Image (tube, rainbow, N blue to C red; front, top):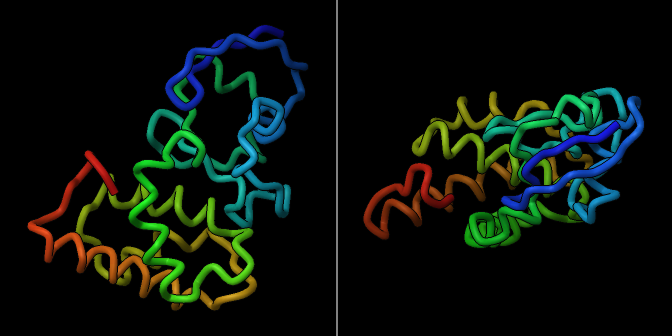
Length: 161
């Protein structure tokens, strides 16, 4: 089956089997930030943005992405660069395996809500599994990042996270 989509801003056309999972399709196309964790839609490691909305690529067929725009962390490096440092400063990236999913969901959250409360952050990130840090570090990192943005003159909304 032939599918056409925009992957990290680049139009691609590729062949895939009808039962190919989007996660596998993306990794076959060099997007190694998309991780396989649970294969049951419970851990968030495979989170990507489809048309700007976070989805779990382990529970979606690649064929369903036909005609859509998919962004992975590889395509959002510039947008994620400032934010990731705040997570690391809080010690919330001990093994780093869950980071891509957390970063993808945080980017989506901050695009939707540039000044979330702690409860809104926790609710938005609830589907991300981290076995190392206990989530407090991620929350502290997001809070520190938001505070830094405010001290630099306001939030950036959808332009940058």
